Length: 216
Image (cartoon, rainbow, N blue to C red; front, side, top):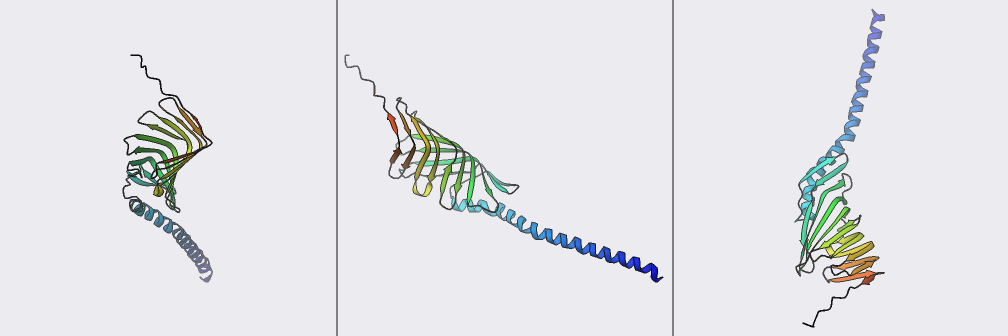
């Protein structure tokens, strides 16, 4: 009788240890996954409110999570220019990491500007990044610009300092004006509040206006 009970007790002990091991594994898994899920849920619920607080005029279609990235569909914002005009910035999507939300990566950006003198302009860039810490919008790919009076421009990249209403462009600057004049430069700066333009290493080619026929 005693000989038959020993194997049974051993099996019970092994089963108990396996159960304990499984419980430890589950507890370890929960300790890892619960904070992650909490961070995901927090970001999913709170980030839209954070964006609305940082940008009172900002709008977006939806917020979703893909892997470890938080994706904002069709973000857009508008504001006033220093010269009395206004602007609107939109993107196809914006993405930020769940663990680091100091910056947002933007895809397919479009900027519309309405200046105080009635001129309008549109600027596009494929990739950009907005930094919440210093309130800068960086355009990482070439910027294409067109205005309502027919002028066109192309810049290698650029940075907008939103709080200071300043823009800097680099990696090559080219403007083609409607009258045929051209401007090539290494870099440029524009201060909206002061209406001031600065260019470095530039070449300006002016096309003289056609002379009026005074014989008639």
